[in-house]
Length: 463
Image 1 (cartoon, rainbow, N blue to C red):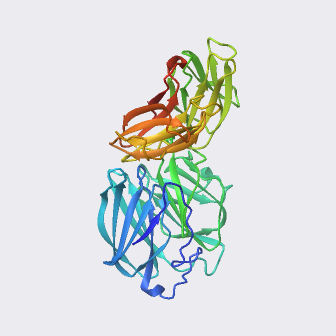
Image 2 (cartoon, one colour):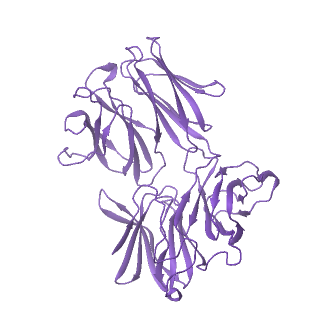
């Protein structure tokens, strides 16, 4: 059994030696008896999916693809090849069918692209074909572009153009209804820029900024519903022979969540201020573990402030950089009783709702452990009822006001434990949680209310 496992990180794939050169020309001596397959996971709330390919009864390949991941081009024998799509739950070690097995009729010298899209509850598949032959045999300064609209809602106008072109005064490259694709178009290579708008509108809801397209190349622009904080925008990525190229959406806003982790002070006024205009955008009095929910702001720089009413010497302001289309959390930590002891730390946060999974965002707000001069902790997520034993931490050596993100199986119970780093000395927990599909939790290792012991694990629903 041949397996490709792309894990949880975004991977930019290299060209498979059995497939084609990155430019698109075939180098296989028996190209006439084989075709190519590329699989794309564009299911917006998808966990990691397992794609199983069977060319015959004795040959099986498995690929694990998360959302916005794609396989390399894979060579398949001409004729029927069966494919099934499933989700493997690592906690119960069970495999659940998402899309029932179906046959793909592989055509020689043809690239077959399987797009998985929709939602986990209502998945769909689309198979498109394009020739394997080289691009630009008469003019190498072009790219062969296809646009695939996997988003929902009204039709989308796509501008794949010179970066300086003004979409308001020019016709769209193509306009596509939801669930449709364009023909293959030959467009100039070199400097390009993608911008999207709804049909009949001028507001840009996706902007890739400038990027370079190599000569003699294939490109597929894939449009999907946005999974970031700005629901008024769309998401997009580009598919190449080598894999998948993502671009941030320069037109999307960002979102910020503020939480008070100062355990010895009941009255902290937290605020968010625009750095350019010095305009106060939000101000709220927060008790311990109170929050300012996720709020969308223009991407760029914001000041987050914290003022301790009972101690005027304890005022702090920190500038946080908000990346486009990204969730951020500002944690206010430290002590309100000691001068200059309040600190604010900005962290990126994993929030994308994921079917059959719960996002876990952990932050260490403990100023001390039971080891002198050591504020680092280990964070454990244990099956309910398990002891530390031989289990390994989910996150190791997490410093004060630092954090980590992961996702775990939904509809399960887990025990959360925090220990002094590299020991089994428990600082907080166990605290039991029950996970839910598409959920998101902020987990804080925190001091006891009023600054007293024992420490505690605070669980906040931030989804």
